[in-house]
Amino acid sequence: MQVGIDMGIVSGGDPAKLDIEELLATRLLVQGNSGSGKSHLLRRLLEQSAQWVQQVVIDPEGDFVTLSDRFGHVVVDGERTEAELAGIANRIRQHRVSCVLTLEGLDLEEQMRAAAAFLNGMFDADREFWYPVLVVVDEAQMFAPSVGGDVSEDARKLSLGAMTNLMCRGRKRGLAGVIATQRLAKLAKNVAAEASNFLMGRTFLDIDMARAADLLGMDRRQAEMFRDLKRGNFVALGPALSRRPLPIVIGAVETSARSSSPKLMPLPDAPQDVEDLIFTPDPEEFTRPIVVRRATPALRPTTDILAELSRSMPAATSAPQEPRAAQQEISPEEREERLSAVLSEILDDPQSGYRTDSVLYQDFLVRARMRRLPGPPLSLSEFRRRAAIARSGVDAETAAGEAWATAVSLSAGVSDDLQGVFLMIAKAAIAGDPCPSDARIARAYGTHSARRARRLLGYFEEQGLIVVHTDFSGKRVVAFPDLQAETAPGNADAADEGEARAAAE
Image (cartoon, rainbow, N blue to C red; front, side):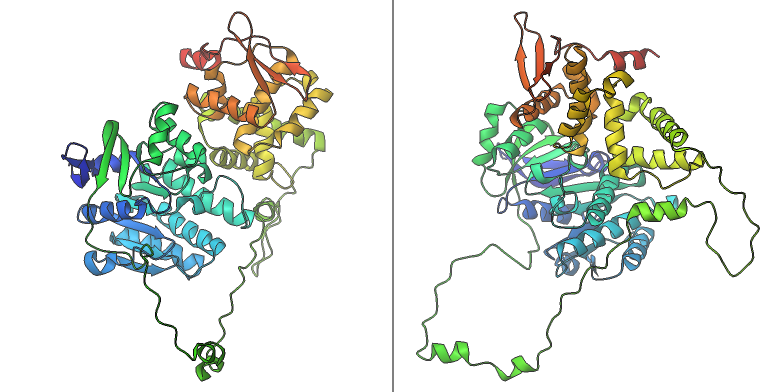
C-alpha cells in the first residue's frame, strides 16, 4: 500500500509528498544546524504518519513527549536499568505501541547506554514480531559519534553498535531509521551512509556543506546555498521524496515542544530591596534535599568477558559435572598463524570490503571459537589494525622493512576506518607500484563512490601525510614525505581489477 504524507510545499506551491512505504525500506537522514527547523520537521513527519505506522522516538531532550496527549504515544523514562529498557522495547514491538523514550535528566553516557539498550531490545525481538516501525533518533551525533569524546569507550561502542544495527541491518527486521543531526561531520560515516533519503537544512561550516552537497550529488559551488536556507526550508532527495534535489518548506504541526526558541522579553523593574532578595536565603532551601549526581557504574571490558567465555572449563556450579578435556596447548607462533588464517578467510570474501568492521569482528570471533583457539580473543581495535594491514596487501619482505613500520606508525594518526586505505597506498609507494585507482581506493574504504575516494586523498593531503601530483601524461602519483617514497604513475579512472575478477567468478 502506497501512502504519501504531506510534509509541506515545494517551490511551485504543490504539496511535498513523502512515500512512507518507500521510507521504511530506504531510511532517512535529516541535517541542519540548531534553529534550522530540524525538530519541527521530525514532528511534522511523526504527526502525519502516526495513523499509518508504529513509531519509536529516541528523545534526548524530552521535546516529543507531547505526542502522547494527541496521538497516544507511551512515554518511557530512560532512567531505568538496561535490562528493564530492553524488556520494555521487546514488549513495545510485540504489542505494536508507539512510544517516546525520553532521556531528559540523564548525562551523556547514561543517555547513550539507555538508547543502546532500548534499540538492541527492539532489534533482538522474535521474528514473529518484526512489524514495521519508524525509529526516529534526534541528535543522532550523540549516539553515533564519529570519534571518541568525553564518554567511556565501552559506552561509545555500545551506542554506536546499536545505531549501526538500526541503520545497516534493521530493514529486514522492520526497523526504519530516521536520524537527525546538527553536524554531518560529527556523525559516524557507516551510520549516515546507509540512508537513501536526505533532507538537508541550513548549515554554515564548510566541511558540513561539502558532505551535504556530496550526499545530494551537487557541485561544490552549489554547496553555498545551504548557508542561505531559511528556518524550516530543506533540500530533499531520495526515492521516498524526489529523484532530483527539491527545495521544500515544512508545513505546520499540531503539537508543540515543551521547550521553544528563546524570545526577547523586557526586564522587570528592579525593586529597591534587590540585594535583600538575592542574599537572604529562603527557609525552604535548608530543608530541600540535595540532588546528588549518581556515578555511572563501570562496565567490565568486553575483552575480559570474552576471555572468560573462551575458557576451556566452565565455572563451578552446585551440580557436579564431568571434566572436559583440556584445550590443546599450542605455541604462540602457531596461534598467530591460526589467527592470521581466520582473518584471511574473512577478508578474502569479495564482499567483505562493504561490510562494517563490527560485523566482520563478530564473524571473526565466531570462527575463532569454532577452531577453539586458546587465549583471550583480539579486541576490536586490534582486529581493525590487523584488518587494515591485511587489506593493504603487504608481503612479508616489505612488512619486515623500516619503511613499513613507519607507515604503520603514521596510520595511527587517522581514524580506524581510514587506516586500511592509507596503508594500501603506502604499500604501493614503498614497493614502487602504480598509484591505486579511485575505484580501488573506494573499495578499500567500503564504498562505490569514486568522488569519496578522491576526498579521502584530499583529507590525507590536508593532514600533511601525502602529496598528490600528476606526471606529464596526466597519471596520478602519491608521495609520502615521511617515507621518502612515492607510487609509480597510475590511472585514477582505471577499473578495479579485484572487483572485476570477483564479478567474473
